[in-house]
Length: 271
Image (cartoon, rainbow, N blue to C red; front, side, top):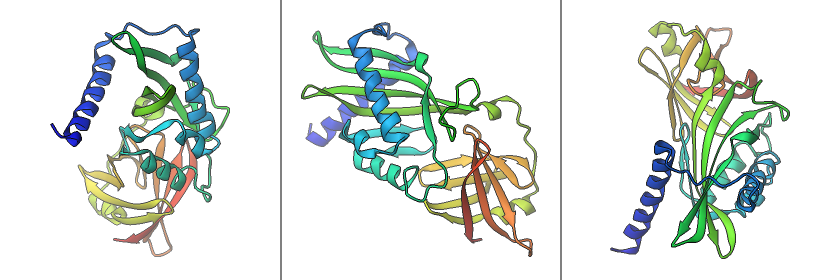
């Protein structure tokens, strides 16, 4: 077996192991929350997010990652390296012209750690938890309208804990999961929204699918729910998309809101 195929086999085995642990509930070796291992990885999580994400000190996060970091996100796809992930951070939430800061908040009591051994020797750990995101740094889980789950695979490298694999999943809007009413919008109106849009972070395509709109932006492809004639919502995230007309009844832009606050205005550039 050549080196490339061997590396791929190792990756597949690691990801399969994570999935097996999550799905089967067999991982009974959760470490105590007062243990050194739990406290060490909780501190690493704090550096990743309280410093690297919330304060946008991206270099601090990068120090904790392997170069071949793989990041799997259930809405925005896959990042295949530390470099790719950091570039996405710097051009996205941590860009200089970002109009509104987004904060990650950990649900402290949800954090759990499972030690991983090879022939009795500790070599890594799986860290699971729940978190949510808000434009309010002081938001609480009880008041937020969204949450997600995460699994981080940490490996000991030359005596230091480093992040090897990330799975971010189950991004759910409490509002959407609850009682937001969906409506039908005529195809003629939907067609006026279709086309290419451009923002500071890149290109987005709006198209028609299953009698509603589909948003394609990079690796993310999602079918939106209509909540009014010109307002649509993400099925699993606290995002809404409002289409704006000019005096000639032409669609000129799309306003993106997160948790009810404007996150971005995206100009329509082509039908």
